[in-house]
Length: 205
Image (cartoon, rainbow, N blue to C red):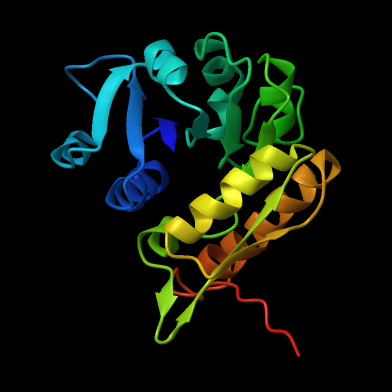
């Protein structure tokens, strides 16, 4: 796939490395080509840095992994997203999010042309993006959104990042549930003292 990544902090950077190593073509969308976080990602020949709108136009999938408060501004900066898939990896945490919206995916939908917006890669810590393997077991991820093609892309990219599976939890009406699930992880990790080195796995019988 051709993937634009907007936000190359811990989450975006970890996923960029995994996907580039899997042979995907990565376009890091940045405001300043001379000064941006994640320059080391360009060591991979499958990764390039471009201005944000140029990166978006080159891509079929766009990952948004910026602070939640910037969701509207970031969505508006993308340019024409017609026909693109947007994967939202952001979370509103303790009220810090886009004004007027309870979750970031709804804010993106309100400020971009594409309807193919899904939420994924938001329910666990960046350390688990870097390494989802716990012994012989890989963690699972989850995805929500009305877009079937968006969910199919996110599920494939979750597996390409090393996760065992990525479960479809429903449509756009589950965006809020996904962010609540993210806060459940954050609560255990940060506020209940469990630390970052844990994750979620679906067990079936």
